[in-house]
Length: 270
Ligand code: F6R
Image 1 (tube, rainbow, N blue to C red):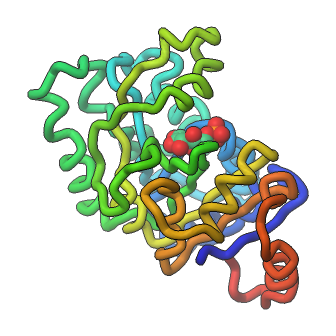
Image 2 (tube, helix red, strand yellow; image 1 turned 90 degrees about the vertical axis):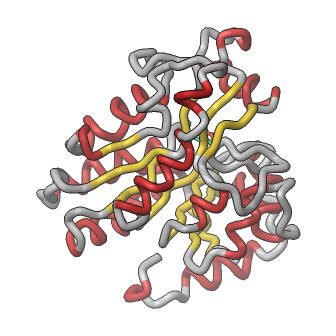
């Protein structure tokens, strides 16, 4: 199962992610980062931006692939994941925008009915990731229902990037970005599949707050099931879950995870 690290707060989680990614980029200047939107990774991006500045790390060759995008939102929409990734990651980290890809980039707001554009977009995105040599570190958040990317419960654990239908709860959760109006939240998305995510060499999942506690417990200690897509991480050879106390509160082996991390030799990193 994934290594579980329990931290005080999002800032501490961010520092752990930033250290791992900064060291990666120093040894591999054209590293490939898997990027997520949402609130969970924000402190991690901020910590990485600070480390990049403090340690004068060259980001110009670092490449990026985002997890997902809404269908039907023009790239210029402030809540498109294209805009969000550029605002929260590309600009603060000083990445080359031409080297950062979001699955909807080629669609640019094309409607769901546009089969000519949509039918092959997922397979093309997976091929682009493979052509880049695969993702080195994929950052992930988790939905209250155990989704990762936009792989909702019931998603195939072997899936590639494809068009999916959002569940009502995810649209309710995300309405906060659309004037609290669920009717403005798109009904469909394009998302890296669980199979795509599992091919990344290192997965780092971040979860904070009591609302994520049940999903985190199912992910780490429940059975591997398409009904908790994040539980696929139990099958990954190098997955790290960083949670605060509230998100860790339903874990049965919480004390053991804390003990193991406290006694881990520093040379192992995460
Ligand atoms: C974002 C994504 C989603 C979010 C998840 C948690 O690109 O793919 O899986 O990571 O919905 O969202 P937050 O972090 O806002 O709680």
